[in-house]
Amino acid sequence: MMSGSGYTSIDNQKVSGSVPAASGSDLPSVQFAASNLQTFPPSEAKGKISGGYQPPRDADDTFSRPGGSGSSDESQNNGWLRMFTIEAYKPYFDVDTSDVLERIKDSLFPFKGSFQEKTAENPDLYGPFWICTTLILVAAAIGAFVTYLEHKWHKKEYSYDINLVTWSFGLFYGYVLLVPLGLYLILKYFSAPSGLVQLWCLYGYSLFVFIPATCLSIVPLEIFRWVVVGIAGFMSATFISVNMRAHIVSSAGERWFLIVTGIFLLQLALAVILKLYFFTVTVST
Image (tube, rainbow, N blue to C red; front, side, top):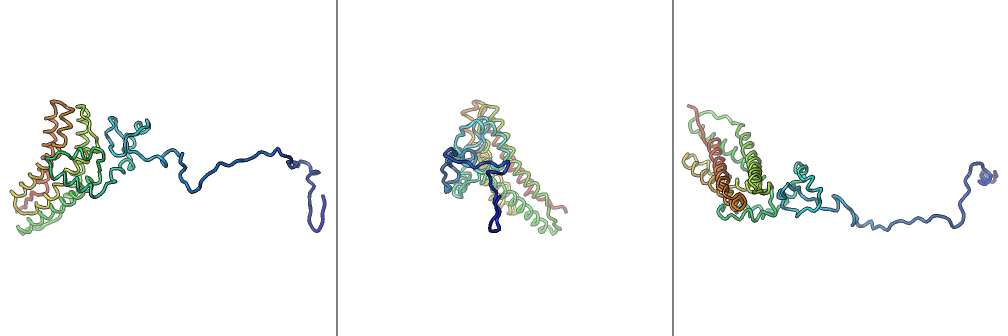
């Protein structure tokens, strides 16, 4: 050990337990893989970052049309689990306003029967969601206003019925969700499968005609209300039946008539319920 100029140094060759410094050309070389920090993610990355998310598919590959055909077995195995997640339905809300308006226009011409062909590859839920939501609010608001006018006409006290909103919510959301689901299972049973989202899309747009019909029901003439709701119900039922007929006839054989008739009558029943519950006002004397 040596000291000088106020510093102390240790001779590492004489200290017990020290490790001698390595010398010579035996040092291992370290190589780093070339990387480009401006490129992210890497071109060979796997998983959710690099691969586009695909909507889930059901057993007969008809649950989701947009997004192309999946190629991995994992998407088929996890299809039914993914349908209960929000991400599964994001592709069906990615739609242009022009597409929604075009589909609304098609729903007002029920005898064309081309709606299913146009939406076969890209059904959406954006239009059906807002159509159903608008119909709920309009039906509850117009129904309450009609009841208010009737009470004022008879000079009776009026109190708002909040049940109109509750029943409207349950009726239209329940109908547009459960009826297509039931039809989906029936078509599965009769070996005429159809895409579930495509059925939701069809039924959702079929309700649009009830929005102007509901607004016209403000006219205080009972026979006029029945005519308006009857025409709307007929147009809506025809729209669904005509679009489903070709698919059901080619798959269900002779049983197609019973299925199509049931679809038509069920849609008419919705129109009758709409008229009786929201626009039939009884003022107690």
